[in-house]
Length: 115
Image 1 (cartoon, one colour):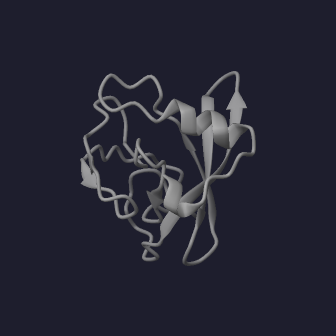
Image 2: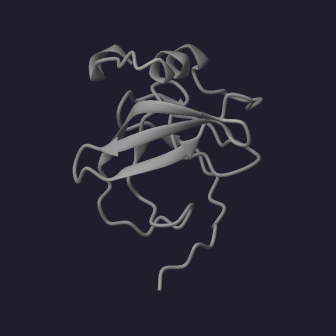
């Protein structure tokens, strides 16, 4: 049976999609780039870094939740898996690009080159 245990892993990284330096979130695990909103398919459970895929995950839509705020839906370029990640638009350091989040929530899908 798969564990739902959360492993905090808040290290910074260089985005594999846009190449920008991403700083740690400071409060939780940073799991996507705040500039282009792309992620990497590396977790089975949040923070575990146990998934061998490592494909780039593109944001393709945003859900708005009264409880969780903006939730970004990502699809893996390599395997097609879909994952949901909470937006970090309230972060003190490098908040997520709110304009891009709003465009995604409206279904205005940017091309991969327009991030």
